[in-house]
Length: 209
Image (cartoon, rainbow, N blue to C red; front, side, top):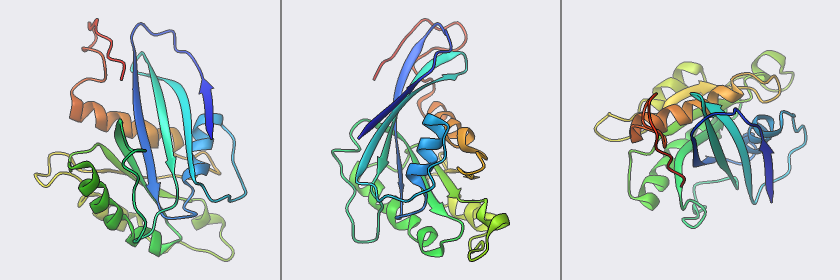
């Protein structure tokens, strides 16, 4: 299934990037993506097979076309499709702050990703979802602290520590840190790649993937 949302920043240079969201089942990957792309909150949970979303956003006065791969929920035994990851330049690893098992799965997913893609310097952001449940919960409560998330993020990335994961908590329901999570991925890609299809403020190059 493919969704698209197009906005224009009327910028001079364009570029395109593909990112992927990975995480356990029911951590809110699709909800987070739909909130970002379509500015609406999806209340119901429908197990995802694989979805593609597209959105054009303004990034540092440039039009960035984001192709977002929303993957199926992962577990320790499931395989990550290399075909789907073709062309992926940035990763969002998701866990729910009210689901300890989804947090414990993150190192397993990261190791699988490194093995499959043959590199550990991928631009990656660790996202703790459903932060609203900490305040609004009746039957649920936080079981992963922010400090634990930050500590885990510091262990994800290249072994030389030059490219460690960024960390953020967000709430799709309250639209808290949703855009910020995706912007962090672009920031990480720019830091690793040097430029994102443009050459500084005076650049005149366009690199379409």
